[in-house]
Length: 151
Length: 151
Image (tube, rainbow over all chains, first blue to last red; front, top):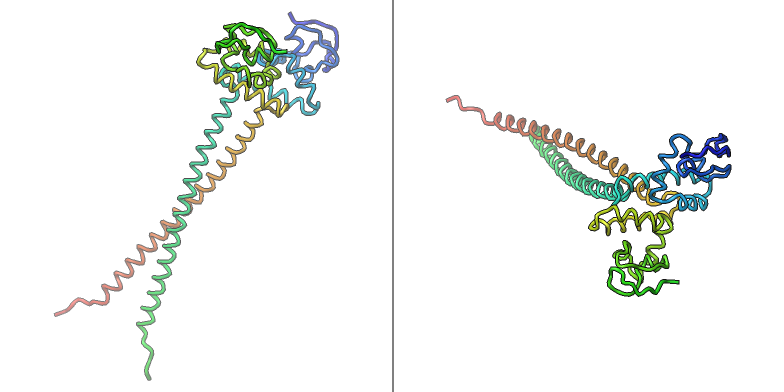
């Protein structure tokens, strides 16, 4: 059952934070979790983190991070936890594998496109050379039509 | 101090596995960690996992995975743990961000290359049309030289 402690969490309310609500413990004014786990949605978010990492490990981790970096840390920890619950074998590493494959595929496509571009550039040069040659031949023929007057 | 239990780990030796050596506990024949953490390199590998996830959480996680998937699970868990120790704020999510940026960059490059290819294809078509036109003009001129005999 959720604690109905009258101690204040950092949100300034009498309600325990989402983590303390989940852990059924008293939420103190210096609770490390309170800024990141609200009383309402917090318990569900914290449940995954607690299951995968453990409250104690996450608490120690957050304490070694400067306060301004903690929101990002909680976001990435929550993401990893959710991913591990969704895919117990690969967790968020599945996402890394997918992205690595996507990078390899795009690199191959880009190389192919660049090879085509280089080929087209050669064809364009050949066309331009042919065009120049034809223009030169055309000019020679036209000049040949008007014989210089021998007067 | 590392346990010097005489109980057999699954490797069939009297040495405790790397995880049990790290945890300083007796390694039983059904130890969930023994197949993945050798007696020598195992303790260092397990230390990161224990620090980030906790031995108990990882044990529960492995028990809910079919045995043939456990080596992959241990590999990804070890990777996540190492990444979180290396980068406490982002962990392996930093790798995901980097790969996402790489994908976005490659997609932009590929779009640009395809746009060039499409442009070149148009230029090529214009060259080909011009070439055809010139050939037709040339043929008309040549035919004009040889007047049909009016005999």
